[in-house]
Image (cartoon, rainbow, N blue to C red; front, top):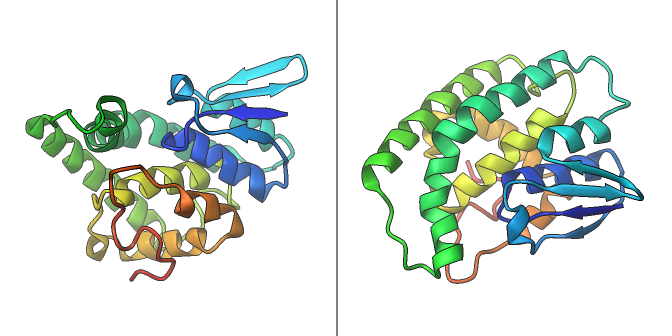
Length: 201
């Protein structure tokens, strides 16, 4: 099996983390910018494209996935398109594609930051009484951790506002499957000080 994507893509990061948790072994290539937001899994003659399709295949033996699917849907339709994607496009994607010559649209970034904050507050409230987004560590947890990892790379999260989310994220960062995310760096763009720290709060 082969998994193609970009190490700067949250969906690719999430799928690699999830596959490690479910003990699936892939040959992976994380230098494919053309799959930046569309990871591709090839298993013999079968091809699966996109986070949801590949995640469903990886977790096909999981049970009680209703809440996990609900959170995945919320992250894909709210946090990502309205908040995280615009912020990361200006903070990271322009840097990768234009060698740092792109300048962010500050108005759009401010609007997206407010959306990120709103979503993270909702997740923080939910995690006050829940260990994971679903019944167990699943696709939605991997997806949220991957999105947060990129936002955290460029210091877009003030963790003092999200204590329960922070504790959850530290527990995810401590998993062996998260190591490749910590080691992923963007040439010419320094990571935040807490990006590599597991116990950062």
